[in-house]
Amino acid sequence: MSRVLVLPALSAAALLCVGGLGALPASASARAQAAAAHVADPPTGQLAYLSVGGSFGTPNAVAVVDTRTDALVDFRTITQYLSGIAADPAGTEVYGTAQGALVVFDAATDATLATITVGGANSAVAVNPSGTRAYVADADGSGSTDVVDTTTRTVTATIPAGGHRLALNPAGTVLYTTSTAGTLAVIDTGTDTVVGTVPCGTSGGSVAVNATGTRVYVADATTRELCVIDTATNTVTATVTLPSGSNPMAVAVNPAGTTAYVSTGPTARIYAIDLQADAVSTSFPSAISVAEALDPTGSPLYVADENPMGSGSFAALDTGAGTNLGANLGAVRLEGQPSDIALGPVATSTTTALTISPSGTATQGTAVTLTATVSGATSGTVQFYDSALEGAGTVPLGAPVPVTDGTATFSTTALTADTHTLSAAFSPSQAGLLRSASAPVTLQVEPQ
Image 1 (cartoon, rainbow, N blue to C red):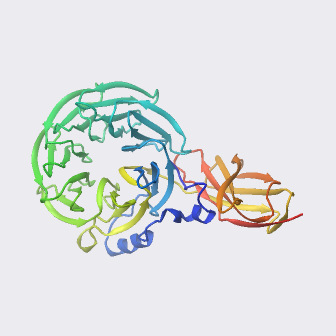
Image 2: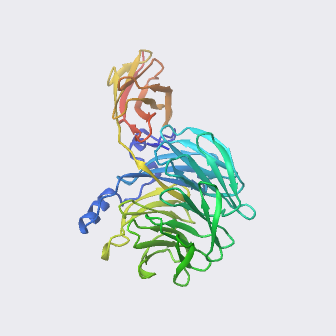
């Protein structure tokens, strides 16, 4: 899923600023102010991928946010509703769980690479550190977990356990998955067998593993409990009860393993759990956060927020101490309701510049040549756009043009007598690169 939003309904100006999706005002400037207020490592600049369900007439989509700028850089409309999402650690592919399918997207081109049939009501997906296996939680019936070979695009095993939420240990050797029966299954990924079962809560909660793989945390929505599980013995060593009225929906653990962050529903708060005292240390307000992901530095905490009355959002919240705790460092409105969030690798920016010959004015029927110059990438395509072909709508001029030696060229004699706002959008063919769009260039075409 990459990288700059390109939709025919957007103007060239909206293509550049993504203003048509209504980005919230808190952004990079707010992050800079908050960072100056306390000592913290800067964000690593990962891409955040969100599965977004249509609501109030909006489409299903996959949204991509550049966490360095708090900007929505892609919003891919798709047919399926995706409940879970995961990113290949190499940055080449993105995986989403649909009803009875695992959908594989090319992270560089947005193309759908495969649709793999898996169990029925899929709720979550995780990818191992080498990117060779994807694990899909299937909530149908008693619950199960499908193992997918990402190279052959085939299901290699179905494990009769779990089915709700799942997480891998850092080495990728153990998979932990919860079920609606209130148990955590421990799966050996080398043999695809269940090697342990841990009772926790009464429903399938969200699960997280600490950076050393020594503790697993399960946030149970029904009992309002956070179970702390020792992975050496597969036993619950502590249970932290959250305040009355809370409904745990997501959990994340900081890199040091000292704090867990639990998002709750009706109370719209995030609770910070001191994992040394196994007690709630503090809390801060949030929206109804349904998914979390921590920046590898430990701050910000990225959350996907629902809004039952309209559009959801993506937010970056400060996990620092004192008055800065929970400060909103940046937010992006999403046209729909997010259900899951995953962090992908750091991406590199590209730039695209557009020149037109002749410039300024041209005569109808004469050739007009558009040249896009791309920096920061060696391959990809450029789509040229014209806002005057169909009224105010921005529509493509021809097919995408391959980039050769940093440039792509398109010529046309079909421009009508009118004022044309021309633009170019670059899509890289390599993973780990951001798309880019040119500034719009105006051309006045005079009648013959």
